[in-house]
Amino acid sequence: MNRPIRTVSIFCLFLFLALMVNVTYLQFWHADELNEDPLNARVAEAAFSRERGDILVGEGRDQLAIARSREYDDRYKYLRVYPKPLMYANITGYLTLGSQTGIEASQNAVLSGEDDRLFVTRLIDLAQNQSNKGGNVLLTLDPAAQQAAYDALLQTVGPEGEGSVVAIEPKTGRILAMVSLPSYDPNELTTHDFNAFQRNYDRLDADDKEPLVNRAIQTRLFPGSTFKVVTAAAAIEEGLYSADDDVPSGATWQTPGTTGENNVIDNEGRFLCNPEEVSFGTAMAQSCNTAFAKMAVELGPEKMREQAEAFGFNSDYLLDLTPQVQSIYPSGEDGEDLNDAQTAQTGFGQFEVQATPLQMAMVVAALGNRGTLMRPYLVDEVQSAEYETLERTDPDEIRDAVSPTTADQVTDLMVETVDNGTASPAQIPGVTVAGKTGTAQRGVPGEPPYGWFVSFAPAEDAEVAVAVMIQEAPGKEIAGGQLGGPIAKAVMEAVLDD
Image 1 (tube, one colour):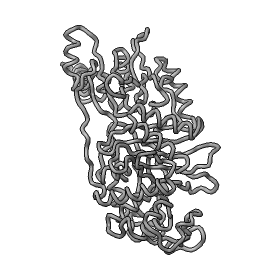
Image 2 (cartoon, helix red, strand yellow):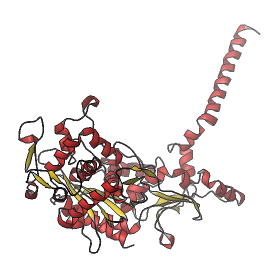
Image 3 (cartoon, rainbow, N blue to C red):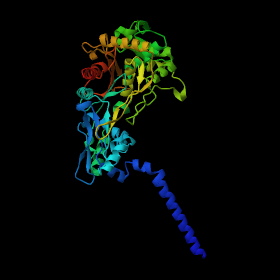
């Protein structure tokens, strides 16, 4: 063989080997990733060409499909529809030709029928020469609680407002309600017309109100005075005080190591906080900033951080809905501990303490569960296309955030706050309610505060824990008790009346 022919032969051999390596890589090592990529046109077409499973809420005959597939007369055969779009959009997300979000994304394998738990169903469909149907996903949401949360929040903040409500079953971690406003209509994004989808998505994405953001798990703000329940739990757990003790307070307090009026902590006119010592019950019921600032400094930043993290701060715990942001109890610069002035501010939920509504619901749910923190979850059951239960989520105990004794004492303080303090708007006739208000300063002069409210009921054997966050309420003066209390009450009543 002459040299030119040999050179061409060797070159062709290398081309053949490169082709074989590429095919092997694509067919074996990279196949799963390509199949799961929503931008893969073949995958997208397959997803829309078969009947996808339902996303369900409710129990028994009262089950409601909040996402389902409808036959459609075009190349894709099926269109995803959302019967109650605004109320559930932040949870269901949406399914479109190029992307998935919310439960549509996290439970895609089940809904599309590709999950291993649906293997027998796929075999039966194949034997009967039928197209593969997706499985159903039953969520933990209580439709009555979700409706109450949505209606009450919308009535409070208005169509231009921003806020969120989360309700949890303390003993299990089941999420009973999760509302985020403003919302959006996912039906506008599930069109088979990609250009129409892009126009609608760009409009929503450019909206200053950020309707695509699930504020329950993606927005973290200063929790303000609702964080005082964490400070109180830390103080009681460490043995510094009991619920029956008097605690240091005072009308004002210059934070240690500082000068100037900007570093003076006051109680915003709540004169019952003015004595140098007040009862622990008064400090909580009247929301005395000076008392909890001094308490935090006495505990120190390490103990404060440990208690916050025991309740879930600085970690992720919700596994079946993403993305989410972590709630934060801060460290100092370069990993050093906070100084006394910074620690004092964290005692009442300011400085750099940041929390999501889900996190604050987890805090009060743990207190209502006598100190035990349960993992929050949204997916209750995975079902076949015929609604047969294939797998049910078992409650998962994360840890004891505080002892039962500490939880009982903090509960007593929160009951006092509802009965005789700032959280009175959450009172329910015949039911003992534990609650705490929060009105958190934004740190921007002239800007209105954030409103918070956390509660659980019945206080002696909690069935529901609620966190309300009000970010914007145009035309209204934001106060956690006056605005958030009635919302929490409505949600608690919806659960207790079921």
